[in-house]
Image 1 (cartoon, rainbow, N blue to C red):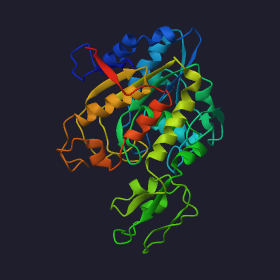
Image 2: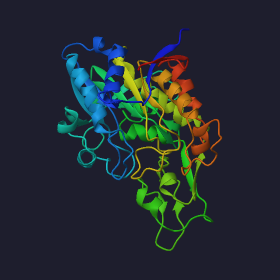
Image 3: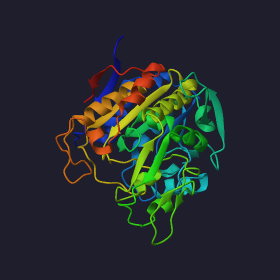
Image 4: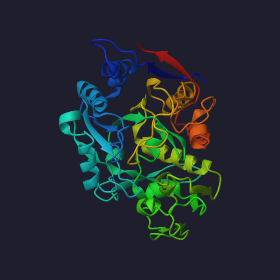
Length: 368
């Protein structure tokens, strides 16, 4: 089996040739413009960033994608989907306001902003898949009906996946909230009372009102209400909440790979995937904060293979310089992603390969 091609550019720039120029060059060398038919509605899938987070991918990168799509004759639009958790992006009104406050608008990116699953996250299409866990998945309608996709991923660590990459962004990021809940259903958090400081942050963040708490009391999670999203774990600053897996943690990752397969089912041969290894927070951009990067910026990748680009991203990040003062305590760790998250990241890649989404074997082609 031949390796997939992953194009890579480093972050060295000069007068007249900056990172936006390099991003444009990656789009050009990928040959994706030739796959866009005149009039194609092309979704630019990205993450608008939670209110309070400043590590998300900057809007000018999206504008480059929009301009290249228009040049090829396509009709681009920018898309994200509503979240399962409480926050600033759980419905389309708040979500669009957050996007605007974070700098995304027609003026900055040159295309309309669309919340793909509608006002309250109920606008989705049931797509058939042949998976271990699902026969159907719930994909945001606006994503499903687009003719092609250019996916812009900000690579981060992640508390449930080990890393937040292209596959996670497609699986979780293109699903309706009820689909997100299906993927998270194997996560059961619990409170370590000895570490609980009674601050109430987990209570405020829980989307299912599953955390029982009053001022001056220890938090307690009601299992019958818990939907398994794991948001309380990251909300806690004191390590008082641990995820207890009902089954192997690989299940959530495998489920997400199957959702990614469902998302891409209508985009065969018409998907291009970017991964920006910049300002890599140890946690997802879904949080209203961002901890310092745990590894040095590594570059920008693009590929038509979502599996290969994620494998390449993992390899580059694990080979990058560890950064002091970050959440990563073991600066000599060979697997930085596991060291910073405590989660094995291989299952999502292995299952995505089994599903035929791509291959983990790749070759890097460096673009100056």
